[in-house]
Figure 1 (cartoon, rainbow, N blue to C red):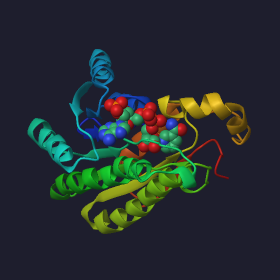
Figure 2 (figure 1 turned 90 degrees about the vertical axis):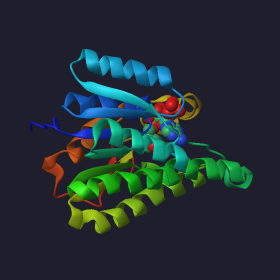
Figure 3 (figure 1 turned 135 degrees about the horizontal axis):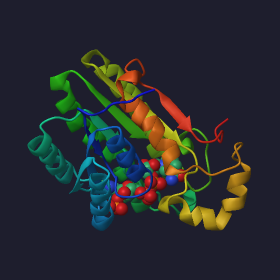
Figure 4 (figure 1 turned 60 degrees about the horizontal axis):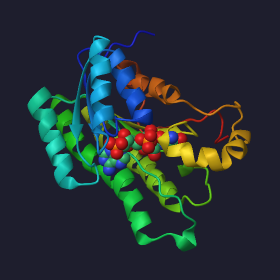
Length: 249
Ligand code: NAP
């Protein structure tokens, strides 16, 4: 299948590291012009833009904390001013703050909900507005297998990612008539900075739960995102698709 995104503009939140970084690379590889959003990893975001340019693609970085309404406003002003259109929005930015329920502080809850769910809402609202005018667009939200298969210490994270799935379905229904498709991707256990701690603490036990017998890599996720961003996926909307080596079976 030949996926051509050459006339498309894509914004990837949290594109500086991990899964988001692989998604930026893959979208640029398919021809999209990519905006690499980051919160604090400026060096990583800029080095990725250079790498994409050296490979013949186009990417620019833009700082914004997706949980801040003001910073998201500025991010979309930047997109409008520099590109004038948005075809693909990947709400990938996310954090974990795992703690057992009885010791979970309100700040642990808020931090995770703000980045994962509020950030997805803030970016989707403005992204959909840009897509509305052109009556076309793709929104891909990063949920998690944790939304459907519970792990201890993840009440905040599971709730935020479950919320992302419900939000995805509601937006998909609302935006379908405008030619905008909204889907969620549910990664399993992918080797990134986010999973380093769990990996060192309980890597062996986690691996035993994965039927395919290996951890995921960021590129296992980016392939599906590129497909969902492509015209080949025009008839897919409102779905929550696990990419987890069978972890959720
Ligand atoms: P990661 O390696 O920790 O990278 C997280 C990225 O999100 C970074 O680029 C970070 O930017 C950005 N970010 C965090 N908070 C942000 C905010 N408030 N505003 C803007 N950017 C922010 O994580 P990852 O493993 O690649 O995870 C990416 C997404 O996949 C997350 O939504 C995560 O929940 C989801 N996911 C991951 C796994 C997994 O196993 N790794 C499994 C299921 C779902 P800075 O570095 O600039 O702060």
